[in-house]
Image (cartoon, rainbow, N blue to C red):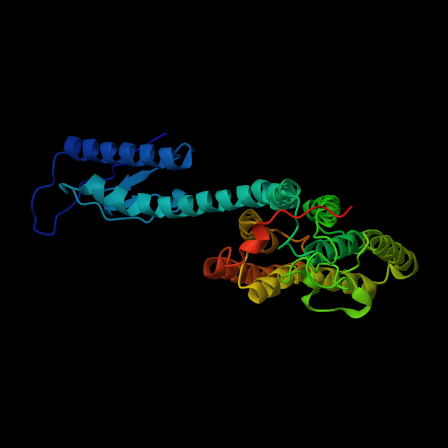
Length: 350
């Protein structure tokens, strides 16, 4: 409901006669109607009571958080002045509200969905590429090692930390995908002693994981069985520890920081391999793109979500993002590199 309360004529300081009451009232009514309609368009709420007091020459709209402005009879741009000043005050909070709604949509819907599906979107192309070329040359087997050890540990970490469900689902799905990736990579790795020494499990290529010998040849075994035995023993030990000391806060915190520190190291083996080879051949660009997009969504989710995300996840996300950016720089610098030998078809291990 709009009302114009006229309590008297506006008195001009120059002693000029006041304008006719009808003209002033008509102008005031037009202004109020225009302002009220504009407010309704922006707020979706009906306007309550607006009051014009000609004797004080003030426009009162404090109900809507608007500033009062002087109204002089005969002002030509009266409506424009009020609307430009007052509707701007409405548009700013509405714009901020719209931006926050977009962030809320990303936070509550898109980011969790991407986090859950990231294991498939990141590694499906890598699995298919190894299977299609029948060669895992150029792909670091340390990637499945890192992702499996940290994801299994994150599963046990959930029992104490109870972090958000999307992160738990992601860890579970990551284990399944990495087991498939490890199986395909081992099945299609270079045969032993193809070019150099039989003592090197990946001797078929000098850019393999074996250019640094590890104690007990850890994760460089010739046979496939030790890889699965290690994962089984690792899971069993964590299960026993969970039963013995799982409820203790110190152990829960240790689980989180160890698991996410291991995950933060994920790009390191590939970075070292690329620097050693001066080439990114064998490492799929699709994996790198998914890592970078995943970093963006994860950081958004970690820092904008209201609780449920421990500090360890946030620190891990920052470090991993930096490493993935450096991987992108390597891809830009080296590309596929000069080593055309990686394009050779390698027979599978029998």
